[in-house]
Every structure is written in structure tokens, then in C-alpha cells.
Length: 83
Image (cartoon, rainbow, N blue to C red; front, side, top):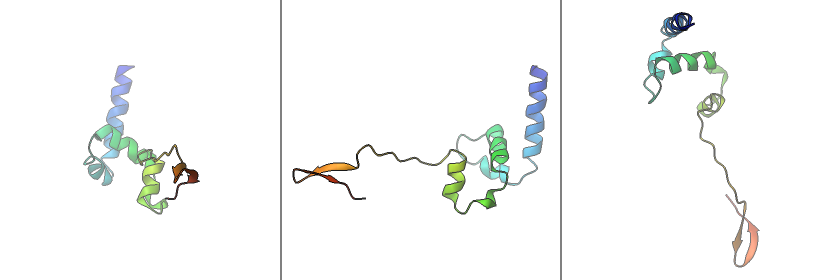
């Protein structure tokens, strides 16, 4: 099983080197050769996304903002907060 795993890893790296974007992806901190290859397989066609934000969100790399309070006290009254 380990031999098969090494062969799969080798084939994955060989295929990822065929894409010019793999070098750029590896410049991202904490993205090595295997994560870069996996990102290439996830992206498939990056031009289908209108913005970078959509692209990163699709891959699970986008920032997520959560709010726990849409209401707050202002002048002693409970009111909806404005953004």
C-alpha cells in the first residue's frame, strides 16, 4: 500500500508541474507541492469565477465573517444596528 501511495504522490507531482500556476501557488505560505497540486485539481477552470473572492470561497480559503448581534442598545432602546 505504501508503494502505491508513493507512486500516486509522484504522479500527482509530475502532473502538477505541467501547469505554470503551480509555481505561483507554491509561493503562498504553507502551500507546498502536494497542496498546490490539490488546489489545481479543485480549481479546474479558474476563469469561471467572476472575482477572486468567489474563487477563494469555492476552495474554502475565504474569510468568513459571523456576527452574533444584529441588535444593540442605543439610548436605552433595543435597536437594529446599521452596517
